[in-house]
Figure (cartoon, rainbow, N blue to C red):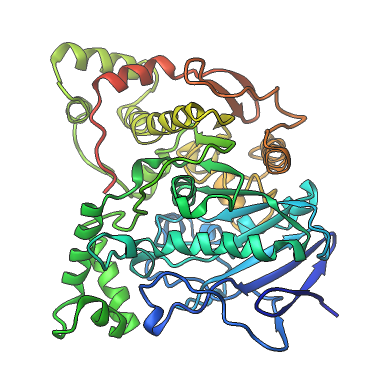
Length: 499
């Protein structure tokens, strides 16, 4: 017999495997179809009887494969299970608990997947919550939220209705608040975390008044607040989408969109992304919540974008000096000489220099600003740099964006992971790094402070001292090693837009 739990909407049945009980595909909101397409989420529809929650539910519609999975097909497991069903009716979540339910004593970690808001799911084998829940004695939750146009299209003039994917996440947090005690979780100790677009959703939650009191800490992996869209940008994306959707009836925009066939919506989304790389982003307006935060980035974030051919400036045959000119507020020969010499002293080739430049400007600088901004609220902030360098494909990725995803979950043995990180023979230190991450995440979720027996004491980040912990085969803690370089960029840079 499975393990049954009563939720506000009905009874769900999961399954116990080893030390962990899991429930999968639990609806946390009503199906966002028909009149609820392009509408904020509504409460889950109650059911009678026992709902089988031993298998994953549908994931959001996503017409395009991720470039990483195209480049390394086995890395599809970073985004969803092999037999994942895509559907509009996708607002469901998954729970892994070290208990069979009941006591409400375990701290809770809600994982928000990344994927540029157009791909990904809560079903990815790389982020299966079983090992993290068992080893760290916490409840782990993952969710599916609406992606692409269905989750982000700004269909009203204030762009308030362009935030459905953010509202979906808030609905999941509300579900946790109401139901997680029945699964053994403590609703007053909830941490949200995510990577890339998921991390930027965490930043949006930190600035959302609607999310106040629904969570108590945040882990931001390779994310920052600079990717949020304003109303004008949201409307540009909407107008481009409508143009690609083609001529319609005289019906108002919202009626037309709700009546459109799903394949037509997906085709329009696919076409518009030829002009806008990341057209769908949160629209945020609010004060930052003063909560404990881990702010993080990977040492070589940009390497993967160059390798897979995705992003601003990728593949350009432009001399390094010309690229530098475009980044400066007031380019002049002396400054160009200074920066060219500084970066060529740090990297062996022009391409390596470019990857380092883009990591600094797209990731290190805005992430450092985010850490300082959070610290200024008075909340405890802990910053780290992930420095596990993959040897695969000749080491071209190094410690790139997305390299860290399976490590906190302890999922190095999941399909496809060794094709990104290398196996234990190629990367003998990777299991130690996984232990560092898993223990640090667990302690932060439980107590609000990251620690691991395999890391030095993790100092609190302050704007003036900029303490940074390095997670990797050779961990360390101290002042930010990139501080002087980033200070110079803050004086002179013109950071290109992400779209």
